[in-house]
Length: 87
Image (cartoon, rainbow, N blue to C red; front, side):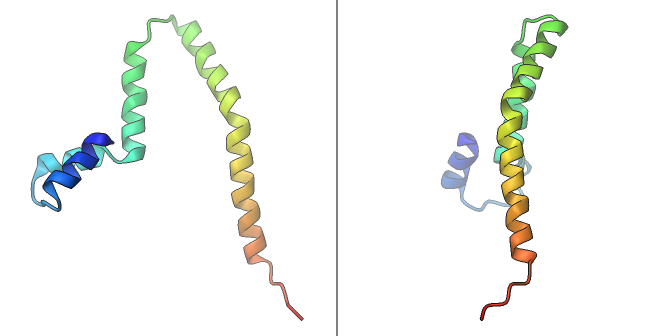
């Protein structure tokens, strides 16, 4: 992500350059995080059972936060869709 920002600042809006376009693509936040995940799997020196347990622990830790965040977004949409009449 830092590389993408640096290229944006230094090179501005250069177009028709496949290298610059590729760097911009892989340095967007979702793509950079996904790339980091793939590289982190290469650094693991666990057995498949330990890897499975680590992933399960991560999901169990993150699930409540994701559920609460999703529920708040759904509740916001429901409240926006309800026709409320003000008197």
